[in-house]
Length: 331
Image 1 (tube, rainbow, N blue to C red):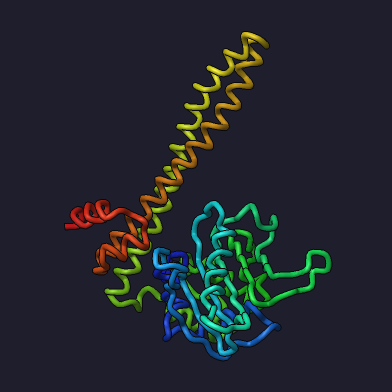
Image 2 (image 1 turned 90 degrees about the vertical axis):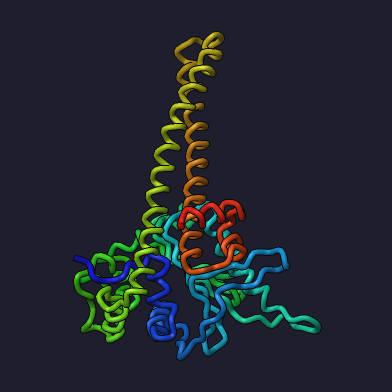
């Protein structure tokens, strides 16, 4: 039976990397990630809630936000499910941190580097096919020479990391193997390779959690599982709705075309077009329903923590009426 925290849960990821007591784990991971480039000796956690560009803007919330001893600002995000425009979303968040460095009055635009590291438990089709790590910088298109080191995006698509325990040769590869498989371990590997994995085992051991922390962890796991189940169901119903709508539209369009070009050819073409359109509409509808359900579950968790209606509305996008209804359902 597995005995370690699932790092893909929101609470689990922050418990491992986002606390003062486990700060050295984050430093070790980042140093292994940037091996040979620079060494982080210390870092300070920053406010994960970045103020918007106007008073009406929503705050941007990161999983982990920190500043190194050299002044580099680093964002670390864990994304469990794929979403449309994910690459643009990460770029937008990174740009917001850069813009927030602006100083009123005279300023020479001397900005600090901002690095964003995205753990992705899915494969994004916009990133290079079959490549686990994609490292993006501002560089000349022809020569590949880096023009600026002030913005950097690192995408780690975990499903594409296929090495076994025995095949891992570097500490970075060992980190990725552990994080990808930790929720299935009965024992922590690599304890003899690096002492950091011993501390990781101690911090992530489910048996050492307090009742309060275990309750938070189980809530996080429930939200993650509910969101996944809702997502899968939405995709399934979306496909079914799409097929049904596609067949109906295809038959109608095909019969109309069949009058001119022949019934057989028209139905075949019309059904294909209708199915494609219907499936796309069904999937989009399903994704929207899944996202709304995820926000409801997140609102329940925030309500149980005593957060205000205004704060819940800001983070979930739900209406005040919806939040009030959720609060009443919890009593």
